[in-house]
Image (tube, rainbow, N blue to C red; front, side):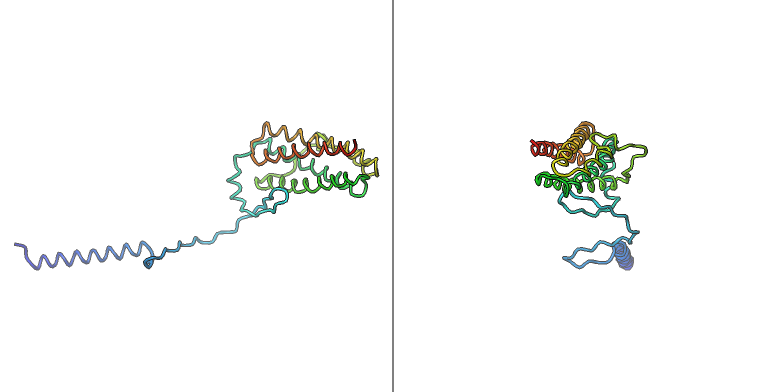
Length: 226
């Protein structure tokens, strides 16, 4: 028959061990949370601020500010060298179109041509911002060392630009339509080429838009002088 004192001692010892275990577990689990409530997550220590990148929206949309690291992971393997080349070439190409369009404001004789030039400015200005933002998000520069942009398709020579700036009225309209048509045709070809070899989906959409819209503008310019 078991000694009663031994049985009592065993029960007390087990109870003590159970109490110690409960205390240890409760401390490791953190502060108790009242029933019906959800414990708030512990906040991580604040780290150093991270650089932000301005991401332009589509034409007419506002830009957004996003962490550079977030964009880096999202865009790491979604473009190729031809995408980069296209953007770096199209920025100065668009810039010359803007310079030509700005001349039309006080030189064009046809009001419809002035309106078309303003449309070119309104669309290609934001597009330059979009392309610069695309490069910035990937840590890429806009420059191409040793490249002569004047040799690109559709690019007009400095002398041709001077002749356009010196013209007025009907003469300006004639030169503008010829030069901008050649310029647009060059951009359409560049965009069409990218659609064959590019990897970035955003740039593919952009290139398709360039090819479509500038083809429409070519037809419109030809109609103005018909």
